[in-house]
Image 1: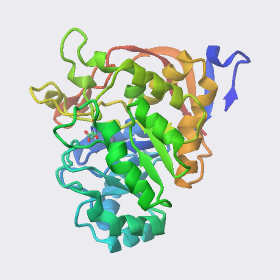
Image 2: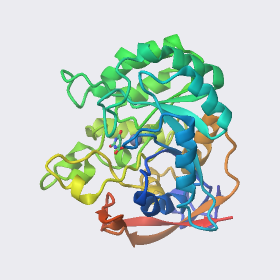
Image 3: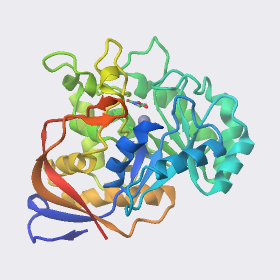
Length: 357
Ligand code: DOR
Ligand code: ZN
């Protein structure tokens, strides 16, 4: 990290970081790609691409074809590499893991408990069923990415992450101690404590929206569907634990936006889709949080170093500069024939980003 002004970390006017990566991202498919991929590529060098398309990405062949479609949406002159994932189902063959590994482009598999979230209806019904696949992943070094919520309707929606740890994550880690697992988009103090107490094979990603907002944001002045995501926003005590973890310098906590675009008319709906679109202003949002804590000097580790280190990939060698210059996040973008409304649209953010060599 280089600083252009010799001031305390919390009063910088400009901050140059190793270019960051987004370790959890949804870009959808078809027309949506052209709308959202440039937003991510303007900041991040790489992103872990979630496989929950309406037809999930369950084969290496599908992942490679999807990768090409994403690359076709990257603006000329911008370096951006999609890191692909497969969607785990009850019936995925362990041989597919070997094939995926050999491709050189699939780095992880995503475990969605069936019914947990958007396009998870083909997800896993019981983790025991995928033990042979997890065995193959452990052998090949393929990372396991977990949507850590139980789907049991008897469990309160705000407790589903905490219950998942005891019921599923702990037994899973005991059975596959060498499997590297990312507990995605954690939202609770329980998850922070669990990751801290675990060994170096468990890490967690943190979204900008879970760091910035608590569940009050969902109801301020009326129902606010653009703040609805899964896992749902939690109480302030949990948000504070997440902020502390993100800004602590502990390498097991790193950046994953979980930016999840949905057409505005499907968000502003009686049955609103889950997902916050944060890709466009993502690094500005994260900078805002680190600045508030007086920990801007720790942003680079969180955004640019700890992720590649966990995934055993090289750190980027190019840079992203954050400039302190207030700007207003656009209220909407074209999204195919629809509109896409970013979280915090119309609001002022303090930091602008510029790509550099
Ligand atoms: O809020 C969410 N949106 N959480 C997820 O787990 C999935 C995502 C999506 O795909 O829309
Ligand atoms: Zn996600």
